[in-house]
Length: 390
Image (cartoon, rainbow, N blue to C red; front, side, top):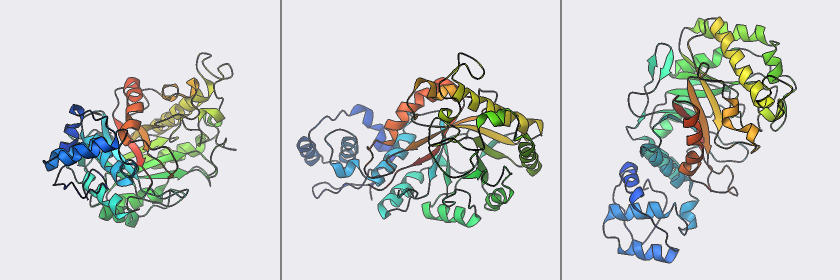
């Protein structure tokens, strides 16, 4: 299947074309055609490569056939082409969220076409699989973009096994740099020693998502792990043990605290920790909800450093779009600062159900990329990207 999608035309034949070469043509082509005009132009194409470029470009414009616009395989191909285009030079890592949840079909093998699109896209030498270290910190690759994944560690995101990692790598025919999993605080705050060892057994870098939640419920405050209680030191004893075990490992770890913080599906979002009020905590010029998250993040990093857990590369992870859409809930309000963050991370999801509005990977990234690059000069990782079958 061509990397441009699932288009079938009895009048047009495609030769081999790489997504990189295809994407190079796009800035020069401005197609604003009706479907009929588009088809007549396609009929006049005699060069296979040029025809493929026209078809791919048209399928990202108004008037293109619906089947093309709503193909998971096409979305994946477009994502890899976008990443290879050079439009996002600060993006240095990308990780697929390989799991079906809430009736979604996000796994790369949800259809043969989608799997083939992923395999073809990630096959490029742009996507690299060996980490580069500067001391104990993850450095940007010498060239290219790290390839990583959440390789389906189950519904609670913490059923980590080396076998699941190897299964994902075999499926996509490409190794990953890190394996991403959730360190849920359901049964208490503990360092995930067994999960980390399973990832090390597979020869990968452990990426720990510190998830301060008592249960898996979404869309409300947590009854236990509020940002204020973390700031006040109520969990310091457990955090000190966590940091000590992380340091004892003597191997590099990747860690984030509070994934997708600007999304109100998680209880660490500012909505549940003071919202947009400014007079009940800290700086009266700063919204209390984001400020509490920022200070809780800093508090955790400081504890880890105080207990010699300097082998951690810290990620600050946001969603591409904020919910609620309010001035107090913007990405910059949450940022802990360059002294506490090594990498920025962002989630880029296409539709997760077939009735959601369809947006291409690059459209979403275009909206959030300037916010991230304006925030700091830290490298950017797309920590989660995926789309369902449509």
